Length: 84
Image (cartoon, rainbow, N blue to C red; front, side):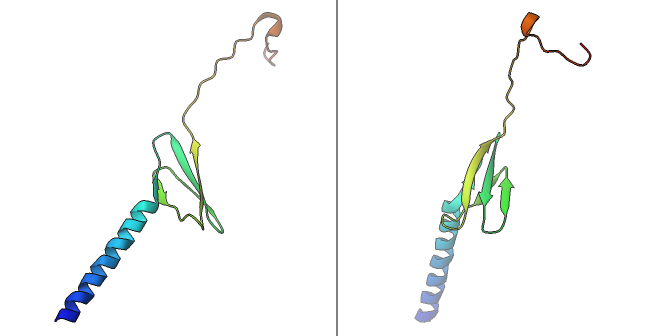
């Protein structure tokens, strides 16, 4: 009976350790950004999050939010278009 309780305790501890490791390696991505994970043979893009293994994967965060730019060109510096 004691061996069985010990075995169950070791199993629970191992499961808890696996959950903690996965939780630690999970990278979350905030809104307006994407996570690009380069694996051995392929590249994954995610907008929510993914588990990133430090030695096997390379992860980069890319900003994909909408940016506005304002261009003012008039007079002699105006742009010539096909329809003038």
